[in-house]
Image (cartoon, rainbow, N blue to C red; front, side):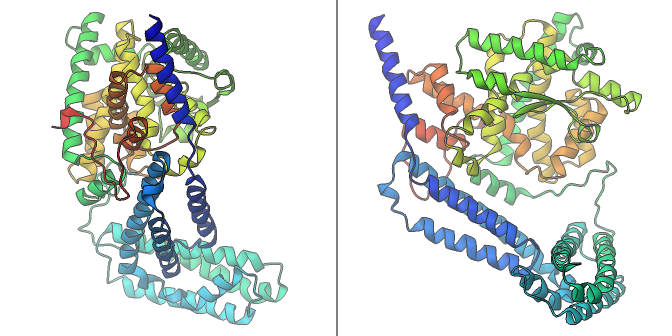
Length: 565
């Protein structure tokens, strides 16, 4: 027994010392991030030749700066940062090149703006403008736009994606012009006297022109499948590139296959829970029963708190991870606005848990859908996903340990870690009642479905409406919640791989846990170490924990799931 305890203490000491290692590349990572932020603040017309040329130079210069480092002289922590920084630069350059190519195809839509760019650039240093000349150029641009729209009526753009890009060029220029104009307006009386009226006319024309371009595309191009959700499939080549940059060594087809296998496992477990509830193999009736376990109006915050207390006790009783007292003290709770619930119908988390529940201004059906979709049994596995040891603990710990690595943040780490805890808790018999099991399984099958529908959409194999129907018919979502989920996936700022990162990232953490436990680590040592290494891809975390060989041109290769083979 003494030898056993001594061995565990030694492993813990080694782990602690490794965690304390610092990286001399931390400042370089911070420099890259600061440089990026400085350029973002300066070059606000992000659809312009100036912008693309400046950022091309930026990424080229950073490639040279990274390449000049002596990789072999770096520590393991520094080698990981080297690989990640190089990958981040390569990723930025890849997307810049893609966007630049698309820009050049329609850059001529802004040919009217050539004489106004000097005014915008000189404003950055506050040069006093030639007010009369600026006014004339504003007036000329408005006239040119009118002629351009008339000419383009008979020459529609190839498809709606090209049209969106063309429209974006105009709105980007409009933003930059307005910023320059407002800098001088009312502070320079000569400028105000000359430019006010021409600017107002041009600004109106720019708004009209952007809208015209957005809708001026070939009618053979289908933009809306009837769902009202407009997404932009990126295609297989881009998906493969994105997966490689996220250190996921599998193809979209591999991931879909694994998701379908996980989906089938979930469905089988849902049938078992259904039988426990007395509904036989009719899992839909059992799910319907579970949805109707929602709490009365006004009692959702207390229900969330009760679930939090229950999960924390369960985790701490088993000594699975260190939960700092301050983290337990300082998490917050807010109510989600009705507007946000249209995009995200379920509560979210981070520094605060944002509760999604109906307000008195919602329609009756929407109220019921929100209550049913956020019942305590559905929330049973997700309160700890959003708070501790999930997103809230991630924010808490990464603010205090290797915070510079937030530059490498990836949803496979962020969402994967939170989903991983749902898997771990299920395996430790966290759910007791069949309703609790059904709640956990609903979210787990939902994460499998996210992989399937998001990848198939980006491969051009499913439309948004088909994605909604899939969530309703095969997962059991309320229709409004399914529509909100699909809208969140394909509009706004959600990256193409974000939705699959939950389950795939969770499987990565699960596989790494298995490896570390086989090496003699305890679960707590593993979990605590993860929280000290910052936000990095799980494959590179594995390289740190196991001191694996890395090269300056390292590519993803960790086959973390035998299900893919």
